[in-house]
Amino acid sequence: MDDMLFNTEEHRIFRESFRKFVAREITPHVPEWEANRAVPRSIWLKMGEEGYLCPWLPEEYGGLGLGFEYSVIINEELLRGNAFGVEVPLHSDVATPYIYSFASTEMKKRWLPGCTTGEVITSIGLTEPNTGSDLAAIRTRAVKDGDSYVINGQKTFITNGYFADVIVLAVKTDPDAGHRGISLILVDKDAPGFHRGRKLDKMGYHMQDTAELFFEDCRVPAGNLLGEEGQGFTYMMEKLQQERLEVSIKCQVLAEEALKEALNYVKVREAFGKPIGNFQYTAFRLADMATEVELGRTFLDSLIRDHIAGKNIVQRVSMAKYWLGEMVNRIAYQAVQMHGGYGYMEEYRVCKLYRDVRCLSIFAGTSEIMKLIISRRLGLNP
Ligand SMILES: Cc1cc2nc3c(=O)[nH]c(=O)nc-3n(C[C@H](O)[C@H](O)[C@H](O)COP(=O)(O)OP(=O)(O)OC[C@H]3O[C@@H](n4cnc5c(N)ncnc54)[C@H](O)[C@@H]3O)c2cc1C
Image 1 (cartoon, protein in one colour):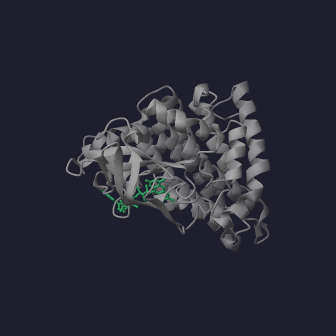
Image 2 (cartoon, helix red, strand yellow; image 1 turned 60 degrees about the horizontal axis):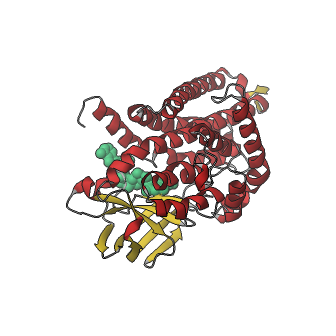
Image 3 (cartoon, rainbow, N blue to C red; image 1 turned 90 degrees about the vertical axis):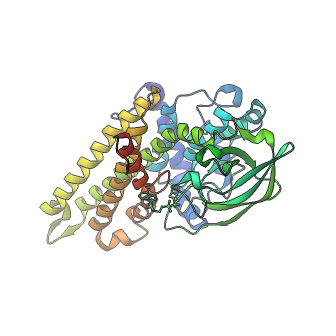
């Protein structure tokens, strides 16, 4: 723990108590939650009681007014505790910040206190069945009608979608204006005309209640609009930096975990009369893996520092999301390989890790879209 990025006494105490919380309240239940394809509301409420939800929110909304580094600690310790799928980071650090930054005072008072207690779970709905990478092409339409917006359309692959109490929804308010026609609107789970589809059946990340959302003449008050009409794309671009950093942290920590599992295993598993880690081929692959993981950590920590310092890291965080998303998949693949047949068995953690990490190079912008952003910022026009 000494080499962790945040190393003050306060950080250490916070990390230690959260780690114990995860070990006691979360890790033992992971197999059951994976089988149920759901995390119970009770764990959200417990996390809320302990101050682990949106700890960055000001006290007036029930938060602790803490810095982003505490969100990093929570994200990291959840992953170390095998809890990839308990999407508190998406709630605390991706969806809720939209409400805090762009909602009216009335909406903030209505939703934010619940975001810290666990009574309100948030999600963010951008992707639609016909488009994900090309956000300007979304079709979900919101039409102003008196004091309401009437929404029609569909979203898919929405994290926390099945249990969310409020959704930050990307809609088209002006279908002829391309990305300038996109707005963000809060949709309450009880809004008339809103319903959810099934929990989606995924390759991994099983605890997560990823879902489809449907809007059929769904009526929400006009005051649910976030910020100004037509500014949704700009708001998303502003918030994507933290979202991609949050996902980069997931990539890095899961790579570290997969490496740890591989190292532990090759030291005890024997073949041809010696531990398999003593075969030069295995040892050199592990040396490669450890080097990649170390490079990833150094890069990631520099981004976390710069993000906290308020710097624009869009270019570098796109590089991190791309490279770390691919790197963790390479590491998980090798970790399974080194476990031989046991790596394919559920009782070994690498099995779940391998399945889970596959989505990391896809969501929050695919590796290809990250390369598009990087190359455009290099002055190219792919
Ligand atoms: C587990 C999971 C959770 C998710 N959670 C959420 C969520 O909470 N909210 C939400 O809104 N969305 C969510 N998503 C959706 C995710 O963000 C999208 O799947 C992703 O952005 C890709 O969009 P798509 O699936 O439509 O693929 P497409 O956009 O159809 O892309 C298909 C392929 O084409 C490639 N491609 C597309 N355009 C280009 C190009 N210009 N150049 C080169 N290659 C290109 C892509 O990289 C990809 O490989 C989630 C997805 C998953 C799997």
